[in-house]
Image (cartoon, rainbow, N blue to C red; front, side, top):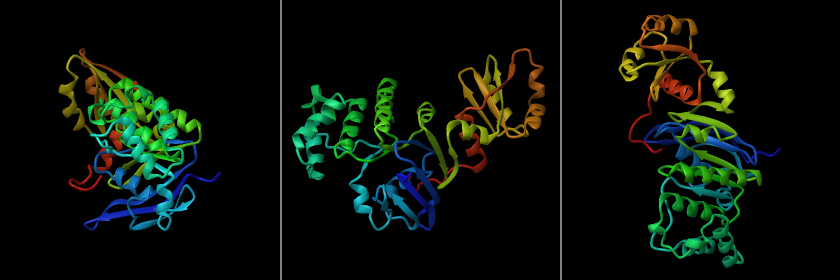
Length: 310
């Protein structure tokens, strides 16, 4: 099968520092890949290189069958790119925004194409509403409609659901899965673990380098973390003392419960032994989840540098 994205050695430097450092991305048609990582990790820069908006300092490969470096213009016409921030004209109506995008792509039967996009994303009833008056969820629908006007083969979505309510996020993801079922490939960056779980595969990046890649279960299995759940009346008071224990990689709060993770089961169990004697606490072995894995990865690698492009 011809890959929708097949690039390697992708590198971009700013001020002498590699913001994206020797990254490889491979993605088959019709797959949804979740692109995760902390702020400043290089996600947005990678996405911009893949869609032809940035020229990489190093790296080779293809996107949608076009050379990443020499055929960037052809890639742009086949990609729908949804930015972190709403990028359409707030003083134009929904219909006028879509009509403008259709003109940019010189689409034939422009009015019919815009009407179909309005219907598909449930925007017809609001077609004359100014974009600037829309809520976050409706702006998201409009932005996605604009991305799909020219029938792209690849969608690059940069934190598309930030600040959107849960119902709008679910509707958005239902639409993404419908598009993938039609053969459209999707690379989506997100900070939400529930969204990550809806992706076919995941890639985690920090400090410009890919730390892990695979399906949700593959990533959890590969991490081979030992996890203990600690429940009690005041778990927050335990966070800092637990972090200082030998063998503890991370401590994360989930409601009234703490997830304590390590990569050495025996060392972690020994470190937690004194806590098992406390009557006010309940310690039980737990299964690692994606958040446990990603927090542990960052604990091992450290935080990203500040004040650099995303």
